[in-house]
Length: 239
View 1 (cartoon, helix red, strand yellow):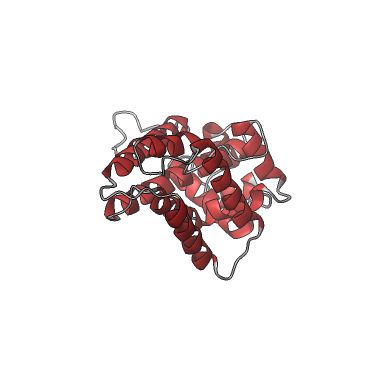
View 2 (view 1 turned 90 degrees about the horizontal axis):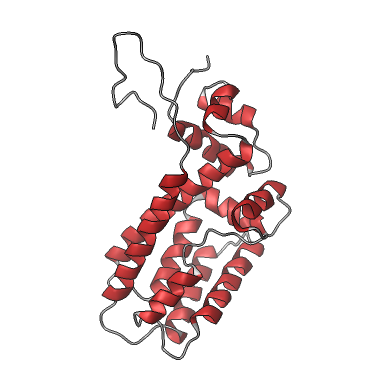
């Protein structure tokens, strides 16, 4: 029986599971509502339409990937170097079935993914990047990238590599490919420095900005109506 009010995260969980299983183009709002145990009308209280709901799924997946990446960077003794950040970013994306499906579909025939990309970036290329142009420039500024490298050109090259990895998917040896790409970056682009703390600090600042942006874009949850004389507890209130 459909429940009149559940947490927004529960709805996003249901949508993410369906996207991971079937892809972006083959998921309907009716299926998401059924999986979440709510009426379709509840979805539209939180999201104007299917694209906005899927955008919410992507925002949350990207924020979670950045959180996982931040932990990996903090625990990595050389985590502030470009090669390590690039390696951790690729691993974070591949660890998420939703983000894997998104990037594998960006340059394919998925009309839904094409719409989601254009909504955010105004072009066919995804606006969401874990290692963006501004961040590459900041790493260069704090000395984590060789001084004779143009950070703008470097970012374009790294983007092309990532696009190539997605376009040529699936790979039987994707982990080996990712490690190989990280090793190539380390040999050719990393600065020869003993302390990578400046890079870690730069990434921590960048990561928090991405997480804050995702939180600001999160849909407003409609709280259930409590019986007269009662208040909804924090545990029961949807988030």
